[in-house]
Length: 286
Image 1: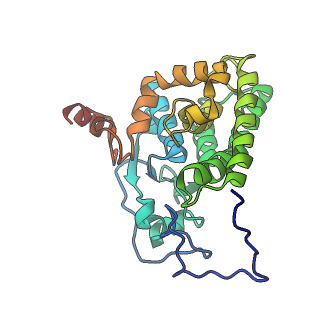
Image 2: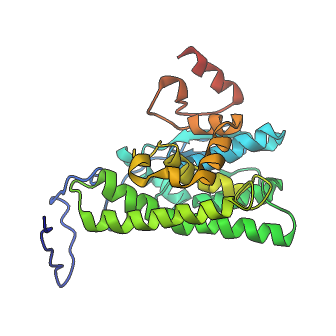
């Protein structure tokens, strides 16, 4: 069936009452800034995280849990829930921390004044450099790691805002955008598969922030945890990505990190807020 032709207007205008019924329709708007006064809570640890357990959010909680597992006590953190569907990201406190109103956002109060850090890839890099962990310390290894970190930052929007949106969230299923983004996502999976034929982890033989950035998106896709699209994408074509994704999935710190700021799924996998390691103990009671 031929899709209805859309003729763009000469000048686009936002019509907030002309809802198209998309999943994120209630929070999409073409302007930035806060919509209401709402200060952010502050916990007891120097590192304050404001996030949600989406792929971008769990990047940071996985890294922090990995650092704590490594014995880096200074990586203790408070994780506060930001409900993006309710517009928490447009509160005055959050916007002050991240003018772009996207999770996650981090406040490091170990220094005076505190340092705000936003954009998930930058938070990973900031923490890796701060604690000298999960990033190679030699120039060659560091550069390779950062190349893949920035690969994720540039590639994942095609997976999330492109493929994921049109395949799962858009109110109408349109062939052109689904075909276009499916083509690109499969190309990206092939890039990862060819890389992982050569090395154990993304940046080489050592687990790093490159893996921690890429796994919540592409690992979750391969494991059929986002978009319910594993069969559609025929992920069996990417055996090395499957091997890599399944291996990281078994790491204890990854399992904990996935639970933080999570408010959906099985009750024993949800920890809406995290303020100390013992908070995970309550999950066994659910």
